[in-house]
Image (cartoon, rainbow, N blue to C red):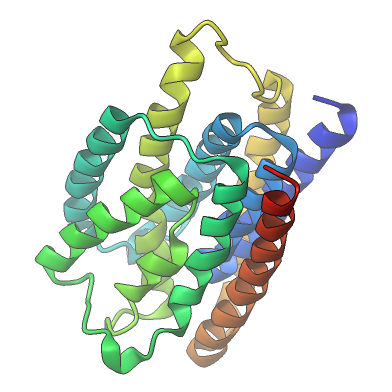
Length: 253
């Protein structure tokens, strides 16, 4: 990894953690695409999982009084099942396919709310979210917009939404680390493509700092602006990824 690429990863760790601290999902979407630009696919998944595990875990700790732990429990059980299935399939997307999936996921935010009758506060739907969101997370790299669908009609306020989503995503990112990290750790190409340890040493505390900064911004937003800006930000990012996917497919991968 070149010094410029390393600096890029460290900077994006802080910026995207701040973004996630405000909107709960946009940061992970931006970070996955940024990592895929400079790392091999498997290494991007593992690096994303490690950084987002820290960012989401720290965010859940900072807002722990708002976390709905019953939702997290059902989600975690389903997440383990999804992880086992994808691990058995040994699926690794190509880089063009990864950007295509990354570009399509944000458009889930535009589904008409009248079509959606989901509420993560209900145990069966919390379990379903764990299966669906972790499955998409393990194939597209992120699944924030899909997770958001399960919170659209919930009565939770913005702090509870951000805190609970952060806690659930701890398990989704653990699954990502296990599924994509195992071949890198155990295979003949162990560690190939992963950033050096010092990049993580810098990125991890910056992710935590970004999360704290994002939390302060969140406190100053209204629930209406929170939902409105989330949709437009992730859509803009999705369009950028679709353009990147088209360019990669045109270039032959």
